[in-house]
Image 1: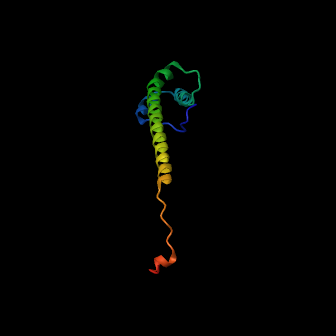
Image 2: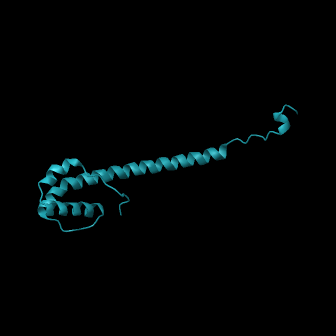
Image 3: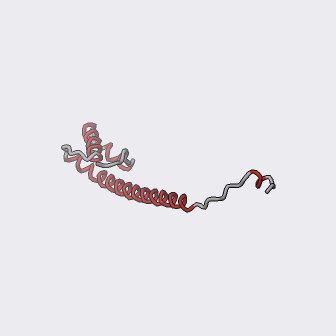
Length: 105
């Protein structure tokens, strides 16, 4: 199952959407959500034709999102490793007594 909780839908498809009937537009919206949630539904042939470029864009966006998520995960793991490493390497300073601070030794 896809971990994404959102997706992008571009304004470029507005003119195509305007040419559909209300029933076809509703079917297109259901088709988009079904695709994003990895469900199978019956699609009207006209809606399927309109949906194809939207589907390709959604696939490209998902691929890009997965790539960015992998990069961020790797960067986070590397950062955590370096932070853990630096904590173990820190040099312990000797404790300074009150007399040493006031100049009395």
